[in-house]
Length: 83
Image (cartoon, rainbow, N blue to C red):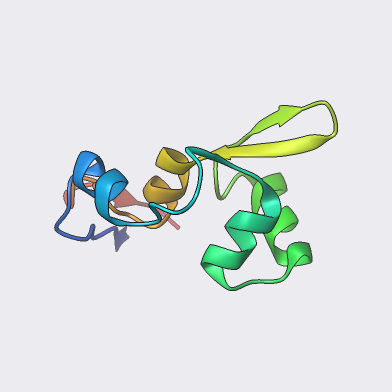
């Protein structure tokens, strides 16, 4: 079992401090820029469900809160993930 450890910030604090220059709902390009990955990898992560997203027409929209969840920011450190 892998233990997900969050950064010691609540999601509310993270919203105010981290990624404040980005909109609350981001597009794939913005998410890839934040994660420093290629668009191909970004789309793969969304299609696999690694990061929760919404599909609007043919484009993906990623709420900033879902990106924080993926990054384990503001996540309870007692959450466990199985392989």
